[in-house]
Length: 119
Image (cartoon, rainbow, N blue to C red):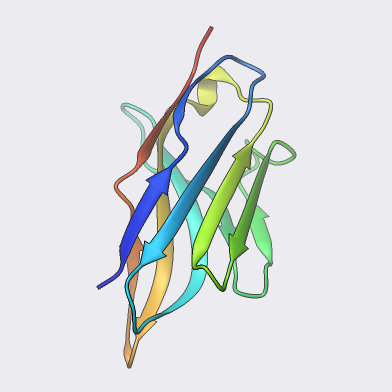
């Protein structure tokens, strides 16, 4: 069993910064791709950023140049540095990781952390 614990959300003014973190707890598994998603009220969950084991990254067009995803393979953590935040970045942000345990693979989700960008 893999548990994902997210932290770092909160209220920030437009133009401000926040850093989200997600730690995968448990044992006997391997982590592959890691990602952050977000979901705003009334909208579908959308992919924000991904990072592979070899640290290749991808970003949604809406966050390119403002957000940076990173990971620590030794600690099984993934972070999202969010700069120049806009009101439209307001959402619940979810951590997602691709996990393998033996011959079984699946994706695990965190519970989400609220980010609110407002003056």
